[in-house]
Amino acid sequence: MAVLPGPLTNMLTRVMALRDMTRVPDSSVCGRALQRGVRRVRFAVALGIVGILCAIAVRRCVFRVSGLSMYPSYRDGAYIVVLPLYGHFRVVGRGSVIVIKNVAPGLPFVVKRVVGLPGDCIDAAGSRVGPANGICLVVPSHYLFVEGDNRFSSQDSRDWGPVKFKTVYGLVLFPPVK
Image (cartoon, rainbow, N blue to C red; front, side, top):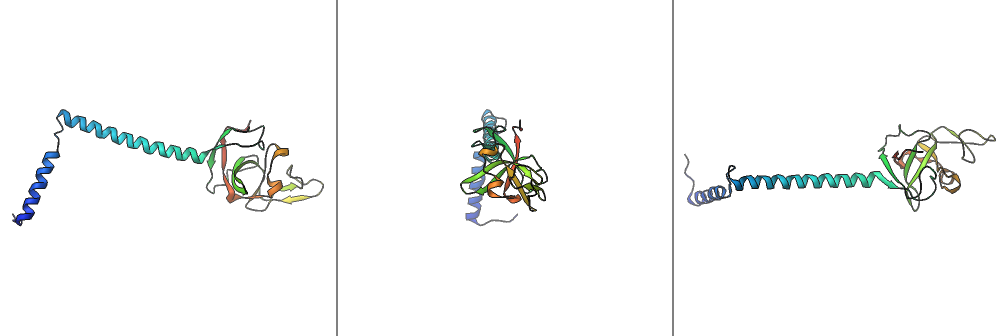
C-alpha cells in the first residue's frame, strides 16, 4: 500500500469522517423520514415541470375568437383548440377552419374557413368556387383562398388576396363546426 504525504492523509481522513457523520442508516426512523421527504420533493419538482409544459401547450393551442367574422360557427369570445401544423398542410382541405398568423397589420391571428385550394378557380366576388360570368381568379400554388362564415362582416382573401401556406398556424379541432 502506498503511503500518502501527511497533509493529504489528514484531508482524506477528515473527508471520510464527514461522510460517515452525514450518512443516516436506512433502518432508522430518521432515515425513512428523510427518504420520504426526498421522494416528496422529487414528486413536487416533476409535478411542477408537467404543469409548466401544460401551460406552454395551452398557450400555444387555445385561442379566443374575437369578432363576428366566423359567426354563426364560432361566436365572439368562444375558445377554440388548434392543432399547430408545422408545415404539414395535407390535412387542410376545402371547408377546413384554420388559424392564420400575421396576415394583416394589427391582426396577429385570424380564424377563417378554406374556400379555395391551389389551382381552384374562384369567381371575382369570391363567394364560390367556379367561374361566374366568365371572370375567374385562379389560386396560385402554395396559397389558399380563405373567407369568414359571416361574409358581410369579414375581412378575408377578398380583401387581402390568397394567403400563403407558411402563414397557416394550425387547424381548428374543437369545438367542431355546427
